Length: 593
Image (tube, rainbow, N blue to C red; front, side, top):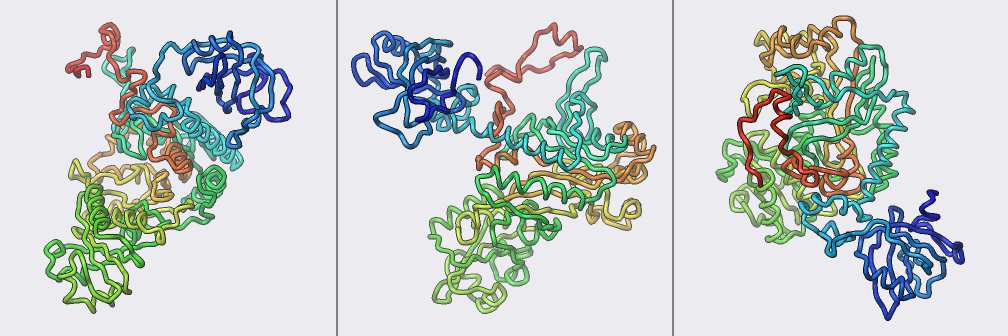
């Protein structure tokens, strides 16, 4: 124990009664109950202890000290007259002989009550994050994060992986998001990039003869925030294996993750190996999502042939997807709200009808379904009391909207969702290419360094127009848990000839590949082993384990949704001298808020 204290504020029990102790911590609260008499709560990292102030001198000292000041208390442990069974230290209290202020809080008013900081506006919480983290409920998420990282590290070492760190300053490369660029002082007009992932370095380690690599890797991407993604930086359990295929990667994570989720999670049940494997196209067809929440037992049914000709205009000429829910007990108001929530999230409307206890089609679009009632009941397998949710549009739109509807229905119907478990699955056989939403041209769907199913032959056929590139699948896979994508991975393309053909389809020639990926291309030309890897997100993992609603709750010092660190004032301006040294001219200056 450090000299400044003999015990922590969460340590003392009845067996310590009569001992002389010294505690340090923050003065959480003072409750005055009479002349020169008060109860004070002292809090440190480990817990709280009650201190009973009973002399005029100590009373004046405590009364004149603001809450959240750090103090030292020396005194004798005694049994409490009025015990608090809710506290680990609730049987004892300290009768102080000396109280000393170590670090004075100079503000009479705090931005929020420490123990209720979660109720404060998020902008205020992030500005005063060092106060927010004093809240034990907030702090425990960060403690959990430390425990999970330690457990992951230990498990990977036990699996024979070496922890190797890779560079933070590297070259810009097209990996799906915007780079953070760092100007070079010594090389005017040239820039480093912060790594979006250690992708190239870990593959180069495989070509260097290292067999199993991992690290808890920082990654940097200039992308917008959302509930399960923090802008700026994040951490992942990055791993790669030489002379390995997809099943080798799966086997490692299926051994590593379930025990950690079962031990540290809000729920103590996690999927056992092997996790369910679901091809991408099947996942979209059955669940309307490539990250399905398998705790929900509802699945999509194709109702295009059944309903596209029923006379309801949104169904005509479109794909129609149906979700049948047995035992549905929602009111009309609840159904309307559910459909409104789907439209907000998916950008598309959801429709519905019910097959009531009397065997009648009622509600929603019932008048269009009623004329073909017998066919609908038979085709969808309806029983009295069923609710049918419907979506329409082109195939992908109908699937994705139905996926959102499925999640909403699962959350609304307890009988159809087993919440208290962690359900893992692998989504496999992703498309190698897609049409970019912004460019309108062919782009890589996931990782550009993935091995295509069919190898060099299928790529050449696509280049010759004999195969549609959008039908090419890759040895790419996602790890999904409870509807959250934890990770993407792939069997890598280790053949330079295949690499050139893969990039040629997205309008990058051989010279472009050699220029953009010189180390990787050259290394592969010296004989590269087949290799595969994956990188589960640590932040998302901890978010799932502690049941947090946003990823910012599990990051010690997160940015806000606009990628600003309001506590440190980043991003901020720099001096003209700094800009001149880096040969940078600022052409537009954002107005100060």
